[in-house]
Image (cartoon, rainbow, N blue to C red; front, side, top):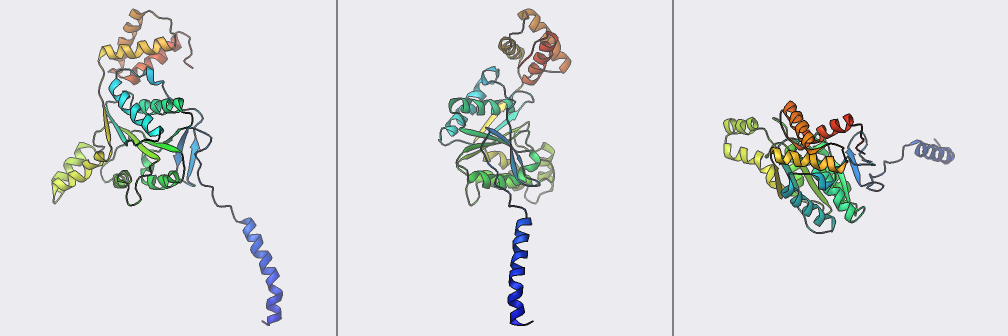
Length: 289
């Protein structure tokens, strides 16, 4: 091909290149923390933070029987929202005693004091391995965030806990100063007992293997335990709800129906109390919103 022919092709090739650029999809925008106080992390197919217009939260004053736990987590969250140092927190223990409700209530309380000061970002258990990617996004933001994983635990042959350990320790980059990690679990050490026992029986060095599994919990600066509630605490829960929503029922009848409900459910907890109040309000023809 002659030099003249090559020069003649240049405008054609230039137009083709410009056309291809117009057809190519624009690069995905970086997820934003604007427009809401809570988000859900979706790592696939394109990483994004979906805003939550209204968080399903209970007012913190309605959480009964967990006064000490409430004080600890609320103080930690408020310090963080004010720009002061704070700790990652693990809320562990009895089912239905308000662990996740307390996280959401503490977040709401911080934003009530200073609107927009704190973002709550929920990450699903199965997405824990993408936590480093989420932290890289949050690191670039000036907004403070609490990353929250509800019902966190690990099973046999599950290696995701190693990624979480690295993130909690901070790795070479260090944990972003504008991010905390809160998790709830029914297990204190996040591992099933048979998984820990199996490490003892099959490992060359059982002590080191068990330490590797159990030490994950040590990465949390706060361990906050929740325990089964007694009947007076259960009554305090339902009385608080009944007063808040102005349910027209006498205390004696309220207690009697609550006891019957808890017996049919096989136990007492904050979750059982709320389910009872929902049923009672429906029978009384009263809304709870």
